[in-house]
Length: 360
Image 1 (tube, rainbow, N blue to C red):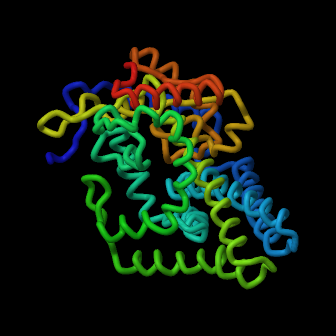
Image 2 (cartoon, rainbow, N blue to C red; image 1 turned 90 degrees about the vertical axis):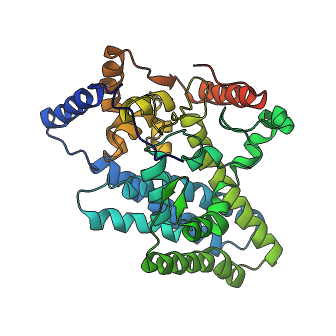
Image 3 (cartoon, rainbow, N blue to C red; image 1 turned 45 degrees about the horizontal axis):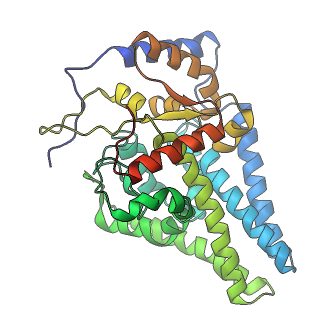
């Protein structure tokens, strides 16, 4: 397979003009592109929520309250990953690499791996978004057709009814399967991933810490049967996986977004910035609660164009991005609120299930 590259022939100055305007916004307002006071308050809110829910889990002696605690741990784990770790691994919390690494390590303690995520998400997904065979996020869900370039099977006709059930399996797959497989393969899609020995050691060490925190210690401390504790652990992961999974779906797998494929030379139709506009969608941009919960990932267009900017700035720069896109007659996909975005995703699943391509 030819190395993937973006078109130079169809290149525009959209990215240059947009970058200049966004930089001017930060300069004129004399503010940093990184985390501000509000962002750090969010960080502490989610860290305290995560620690508090975990403490509640270990201290409760009632099995019903224990299940509530597992749910809370799953929710705060997902929200901590979205609001803290995601920004940190992108290097958007601070100009200091050590600060970003400190918060990135939370991701490892929560069972995932920052090194594998950096290659899978930051390098590959953010470069080759929605490109079949390269962006593994497109192929992440078993038995669900999420690209018009994937083979169509008979059971896909029913995926609109069962797809949501699979979204909750995302995090447990990371914890027990995906990170190990990707580290062993040393490859994400068609992109080679170096596997230094120290990263293998880090992966195994942090996984053991996670298993100890969320399986061994509860088994030793809680006055319940191992089956009940395991049930709670699985419920926790389902809540965590579904929360993370649905946010991704509403950003990339909705009606109207495109799934470009390279030509025989490995060249995609557009340049990188324009490619992001055609493959990404926002949702519920005016809803402050959604923005607070999703870590700004409801501003997915802005995130893909400016992943090094802290998500707390996305509402402000979104106006600049939208206006500039309009000036260049480029798309700016957005669903006004959460539930229309869900409906758009269901419509997309239905089209993919029938073997049709999404509307362009």
